[in-house]
Image 1: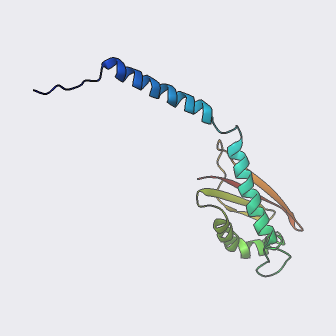
Image 2: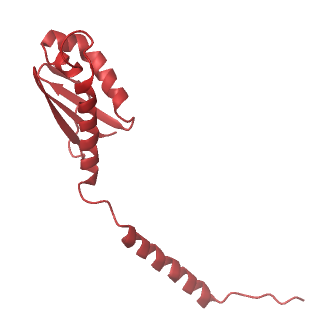
Image 3: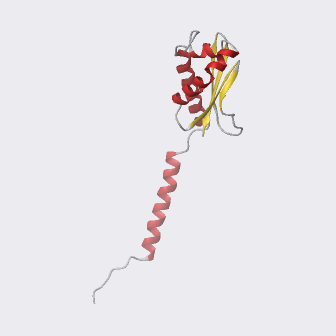
Length: 135
């Protein structure tokens, strides 16, 4: 018969206690994201999208893509689908958006009760507001 060593129950309890303390300490040491960090990141996404759109050339007429869609209601209707497609390509896939112009909006209805980011871009034809939120 061979002797087998056994780990005492006290040692098992002590090991579990150390792991529990380590987990609690790590949680406090790493901390949680600062309040408003999610909204700040969303604001940056919206601002980046506004910057890209405000610097792109128009598809037909105007100074930029955004000035083209704010030029008139007919210009907005003509460019609506192209604008929506371009915004979808600019933003990460996990974001939803709404772009509001003086002549209409593209994107999704903005939900209530979720963090959103916003950027406003002035154009010759009026302000364009870009809203983004996580899908």
